Figure 1 (tube, rainbow, N blue to C red):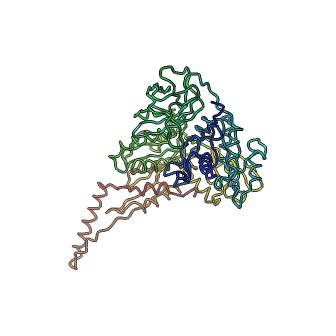
Figure 2: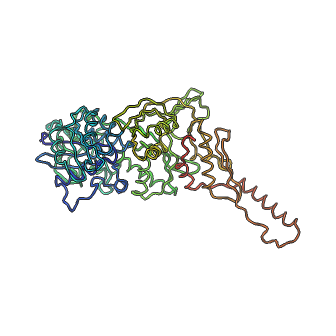
Length: 594
């Protein structure tokens, strides 16, 4: 049975036709009828279909010439590399897909190295050969050189028209080895993903490695020693299809019936509760969040609903990390850790759409290591956690890989230098395209680096990164004061050189966004006790002389003096409401290195 199973992933840079190829495979193997077919079948989330990107790994079983092929579809964006690594751990091979008109991109390189690290068989495929600007032979030669393959072994296809897709299915059978496992051993299955069904509880997506499992069997999750009955077993075709058993080598799902989402972890091993396996399967390393931001409900009564929503979303997204946080300005919420800005945006949109919440997101920041004068080391996720007696601060650095057409090399170098980057390496991939390596502070990348990269190269550049570790930097906490009171949710940690420019841009924007009061409101940016920028939201003036049609000037002066005294008293007791637009303005600040 194992000889007739092949488990594979499709890996590619974002927008190289991965979901389209998956559609053609489903069509060609007649897994779905013509009536059921639609574009991006495996992108089941409304958000994925809108944006044209894959966010979640999806699994599907197809039959081809007597072989069972299990496809685990993967995302392409750099923020979702963790999803890709989990999918590859459940496979023996991968299709490495490259656009014939764009060639090898940064994420192509990263995914190829990831597949080689996992010791997977790689089937190289050049897609979109039907485009007028395509260069299939040139890109095939590049791809062959990258993975050490002969150029004539690189498949050339058009996923859109279906040309060459049959050869891809044949290559999967010929070049990818069957799964290794012992069908007679105690059952062991790797949980590579999970989801929450509000009617049936936690659904585990599994790759069975040894033995077999049957429906209604008593099963155990090894890490937390939770025992449950398998209410239903089955496989994806591509919707959930019940089956009586799942055997070694197969990919499918188990409905656990668990209502508490914290009782099953991605990367855990499932085994029989009556005859448990002696050792668990190697799981996944815990992913470390890169970007941190606060999520607060606009209505404080929705705090419990936000907590439940984050619990359910974490089951579906193992890279999400969160802990409770309190803000003077925003009330109760959560400090969340994300893999990157796109990940943060996707999580926020999913919370708002799937759980009907209205949220305020604070400015994103990264984790810093601060050493205090008293000899303690503190990890700072939030600017308000920065200790007062700081001796030194270290910030995370990344090794950025940028692939760009040669005419944009200058603008990419300029952007990287503006963001405090250190040049590391330059290499020509071919006559037209250049690979650049820079060491960059992660804090300079999380806000708008990706947007700038795309706009300065007209969308032709691609970007990927690896974390290098922590390095010392001249970093300070920039506080925003409204009427003399600090607003903790607007605090930032910035490089000392950029503090004035950032503070000036911030107070200018807040002056426009904060509604006028009946008294002057000073908006200040300060480092400690030193104010580096200030603007004033001018008072809205009530005309107290409107009812005076002449008469003695002293009467008018008395009314004005009374108004002045009232405003002075109001300044002492009045408070300023910070609207949601002001917090969003902080996110949209595009001050770069000005």
